[in-house]
Length: 104
Image (cartoon, rainbow, N blue to C red; front, top):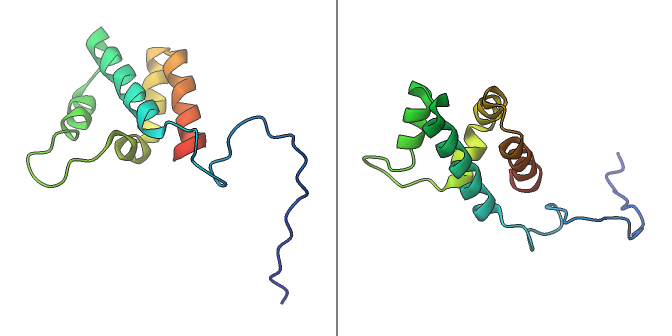
């Protein structure tokens, strides 16, 4: 079986950074913090429930290592997407989709 892979010719048509080539120029940590800020704002606006209290408490656990925001977003991306959809928060949803594409 031939496992040789060929790479497509460089066409110069890429208009954005490709995470598979390099994370240079992608602010994954900063964008994850911004997603968390959107979550906090939507909770403060009355859209939260018990799950989101639990989720936010995970940022400061009583024991063990403190997870970074990117890890938390990555682990709960589907719940966060649904939350932003329920909140009708298009800006937050757009940022989440960008973060997922670039960093998760």
